[in-house]
Image (cartoon, rainbow, N blue to C red; front, top):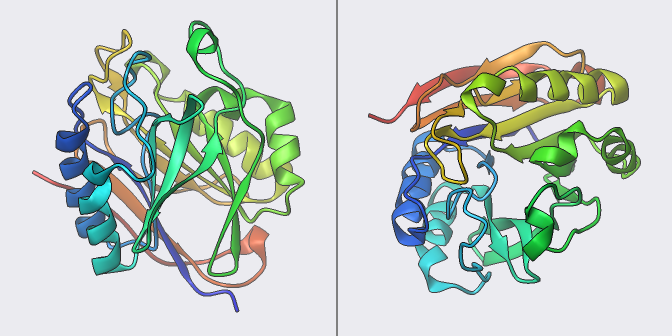
Amino acid sequence: MRKALRIAVAQPRCVLHAVAANVEAHVELIRAARARVMVFPEMSLTGYELDADVVAPQDTRLDPIVAACAEVGTIALVGAPTPGPSIGILAVDHRGASVIYRKVYLHGSESDRFRSGEPAALEVDGWRLGLAICRDTGIAEHARRTAALDIDGYVACVVHSKEEAALHGERARDVATEYGVWAATAAFAGSTGGGFAQTSGHSGIWSATGELLAEAGPDPGEFACHTFEPGNRANCTARDVGTSKID
């Protein structure tokens, strides 16, 4: 039976290539948000560094995230270079970590190292979450193929420059209104490597009609939350909405 789903989008502080330090930042946010699903940006464990080492699901550096997820009942969707290698999403919960998605539409020098994946969805408490990483969200064919998986929400991990702060919101609204699903996008804030001296922040959650339900600010350490209640996927209602910041 479908349950109320509290989802959070997070903007962790990032130290380039420093997985252990970045894990600590993820843990702080997981404990603060206490969400059922917590979404982090593209390559959140390493920063957007295309030469970063692969993070395998069994990497013991992920253990603090596993413990935090067990403590608060969270499924954390974290970004990293994953085996393949691919630009991937690791789902972390009380049982450990697994690769659940690999970026489909690579661009630029990403394709020199990484392999692309296929559209995928994750089921949580009766909700089907379509998955995307950054450029995927701007490809109409990706949205079409993902929506065909009978999704309730479209969940994306991205990194955009400060000048592109409005971009992920535009893309989220396009998918939401086209397919009648809600959308949640976690974007980096601050510096994150790969030429991104300053990234966009403003991670957000949108309704199936394109209404902004919750939004973080421009700074690292912020997150935004929204709770979807069971019911018609196009008219999900909020039980609580909030934005918080870790100092």
